[in-house]
Image (cartoon, rainbow, N blue to C red; front, side):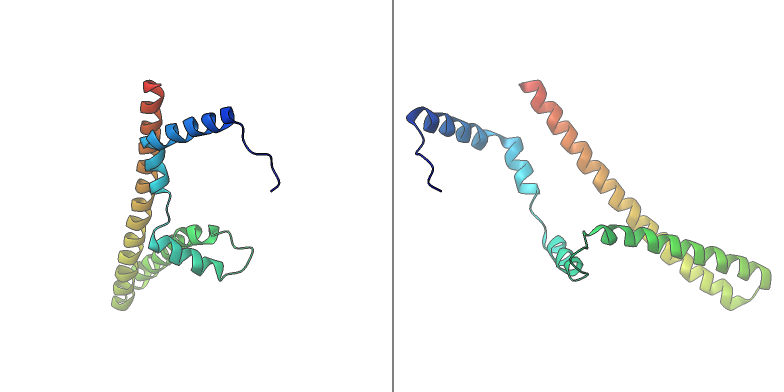
Amino acid sequence: MNEPPLSARERRVLAEIEEQLERDETLARSLRTMRRSRRDRRSLSAGARLGPSSDGGARHRLPRLAFAGLGALSLTLFVLAVATEAAPLIWLFAGVWIVTLASLARLVGQAFRRWSAGWERSETTERTEKTD
């Protein structure tokens, strides 16, 4: 912390850099959208309780694993319902199938949001490169 003070030229260059950064709307928008939402903070704190080695990756894999499990359960119930023609198995299959489709819709929605966010970032980057 015992650094020498900045020279007048260095202070002027630093002030110019700060001024350019303050005028950069794309940077300001990116910094605003980088904030964690309340939902992200809650899930991050829930993930932190899993242990020090938890990197939050399990949180992203869980919906996919649940969908795969529901799909396997649906297929098993379908085969059993067709083989036995038992009404309770048919209804159980119908209920599990609806939950499976709902989880698929959620996964597709999440994938679309990630894709569209990436698309918007790439468009913004292209626009700023063209103006430079």
